[in-house]
Image 1 (cartoon, rainbow, N blue to C red):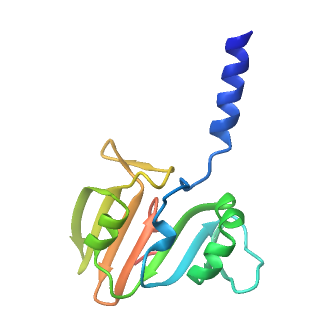
Image 2: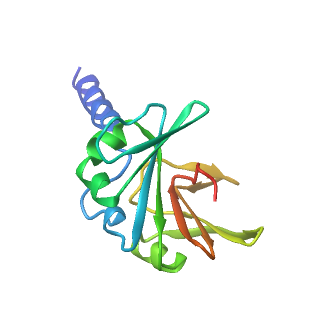
Length: 153
């Protein structure tokens, strides 16, 4: 009976985990964030959020400040989150997030880096390796998606 209680307790704790690990998470402390996009199955109807429907997904755009203020609500309903940066390098993002590079490649003039950071819980498998951050760098800026970029580059 004790084992069952412990199992149920652990299951409840695990099912209540958030998309992002809390504590010293530097994700929402990154510099030069121009915009944040939460990808969701539902439209976010909040002040200062612009929602764009595309197929069965909504892309909910807001400022970093709005994202921080509403993070608990937003992350519960999100499949992914993306950050749009100015004046930052891929290396700076990887360093701040303590991310390991899984793979890097170039496609149509876009430098793409796949990595894994301990600060994001959701991940996808790419060639059998865990990936929870995708970063695309172009001449117009940098986009980082967690676990992947879903809006395009």
